[in-house]
Image 1 (cartoon, helix red, strand yellow):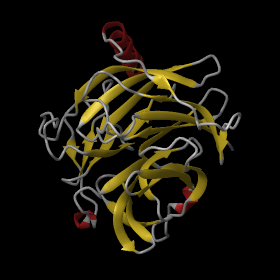
Image 2 (image 1 turned 135 degrees about the vertical axis):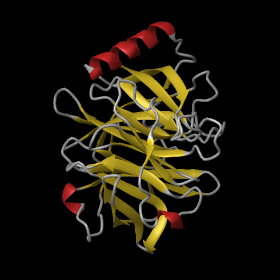
Image 3 (image 1 turned 135 degrees about the horizontal axis):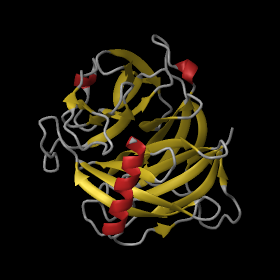
Image 4 (image 1 turned 180 degrees about the horizontal axis):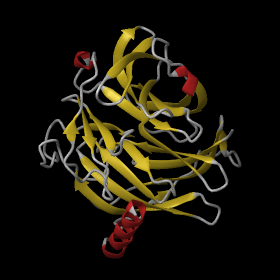
Length: 318
């Protein structure tokens, strides 16, 4: 029933809300004719999003529905954007429509739109229903209850993981994902345990076990999502001033999530020039109709004219 009501709400929005400026298809690369694979990722389309609403941008976290039609993106300025995705006859991503864009509600029941601490960085499904959302600047975790209209009800504040108080203003929890055994994995961007590891935590919102996430310099984790097989996929970013960026996509085998053991990753692919590059911070995954695993990446343009809002789609090879 909840899925039916969500679909009905989306169809009503599509019927009454203009899409804004068109999205523009982008290539995987420039000048490498015929190449559609990077590592274990197969290109399934990408778009640049330039919607008319100036509030759109700064995507740092997202989730996608099981059918791949509705994508919920959260921004650095505390907004929730609902996108309706379109595909071509081959099932590749071809366009998107912006059907809703509203401020996220804070723990006191008010909009956080004008709050300087509204910097959302991660989202994950909670084991008992609803959504966990992680914020930077004022580092905190909020639990939004399950609803046919996600993230529109007032949330409650969750326990702060031990060690998060050491985080600098904009370098706190950057990635979050549900795990195969119904826990939540949180990964910090730059809270070091030692030179080789970042702080991470495994828990349920009421208690958190400190973990160590193995770094792969110069990349730092920016997003995570649960894969259909129970592994977790992460996106990591590197930045070389003044403007050179690249990304690494890797997976965390479910057996690697053991308290007391460092979290290890296995590389899937790297997005480096001449392939499409941007400030990728958000990742989502789903299972397709024939058993394929589909991965989406979205970029954070930091509301800058020098950066782009990109959404990419890949198929993960077995």
